[in-house]
Image 1 (tube, rainbow, N blue to C red):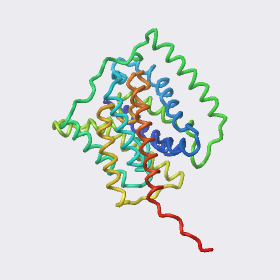
Image 2 (tube, one colour; image 1 turned 120 degrees about the horizontal axis):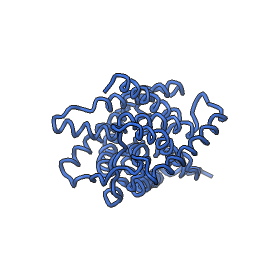
Image 3 (cartoon, helix red, strand yellow; image 1 turned 135 degrees about the horizontal axis):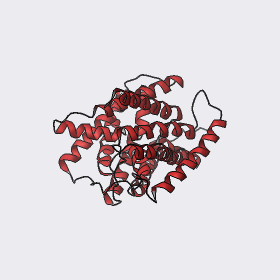
Image 4 (cartoon, rainbow, N blue to C red; image 1 turned 90 degrees about the vertical axis):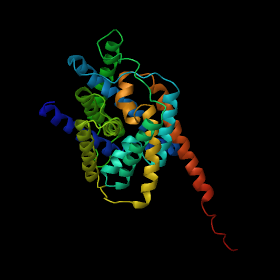
Length: 322
């Protein structure tokens, strides 16, 4: 791998993390906003991100014979169960793949426990089984076919319209709009997809766990991209004046437990919600149609149960004397 490609990948990682932080992009936060306000805006923004990835990555993959999109995975019980488990784990953890990245970048070191928990989940699944899903074939967008060309044309039409609209949108010094954030995430993520293939940090973590178990070398470019993404998130947090370094020791058990469930789920999806948004959906893999709704349902259900429990456990208000 040339130094220029590695440098470009590092810069894309910085941009990705920066944009995710500026937009506070997180499935758990999106579900909480949906439950509180009835607006699914943040969740819909993730669909927009996938379209940006299609528009950027697909033509680059067509031009580079050595580049490949992620393979297809069949929809089924593994995708359903994995999505549900990942969503429940994300709710326990207090953040999905994106949320973990931006909270870690903002200085909350308890989310390092999420990484440890997920690594344990991947290791546990590889030892206890059952085996994760096997690829079902190449993505239909990997070559300019009668299906791929119209899909790319629609994605390009969407991002062109979106770029014109965002150009007229004022740029806030604090939080970006979700649409602006996912546009930058989609462009940087699409470039990374073409340069590195499946690069999402949940995929990188699983590969690292597998490599250590088999005494194989780590995928160093993916580790570098994750580190740069965290640095980008830290940069974004500093710009938003939200950088607060802290250990948050009381939160570590919760993060580890949530990460463990997330890791078990991601092993069967495969990947976390970042892999679904950045790889699966842009590759038109049908397992996304099962795993993504299951993930949202799992997180929403766990959040609703948590709210109900806190309401029951809360002490009654004091009785005022007449």
